[in-house]
Image (cartoon, rainbow, N blue to C red; front, side, top):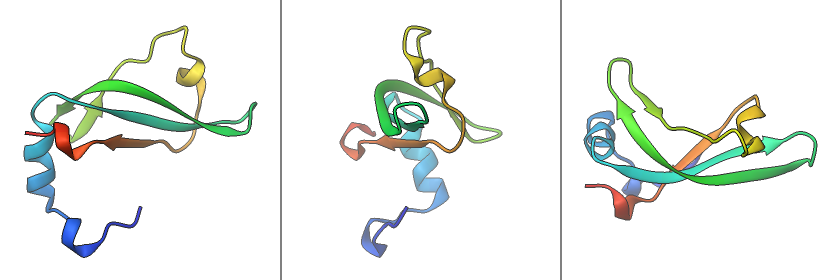
Length: 79
């Protein structure tokens, strides 16, 4: 994803911003409907190794999507 130079942050800054509670959209591609799908979810940052963790309910078919995914976290919600 392209990020303009003035909006880029270091890895340390990204980790600091993700340590508090955050919410964001999980975006995947539905191969059957042939369209992108987004779900607004709470996320928790787990260091070592760095990863974001959330839960998608079973009634939300998005959990079946395989392949690349994108998580978009609104910067206004970060600490």
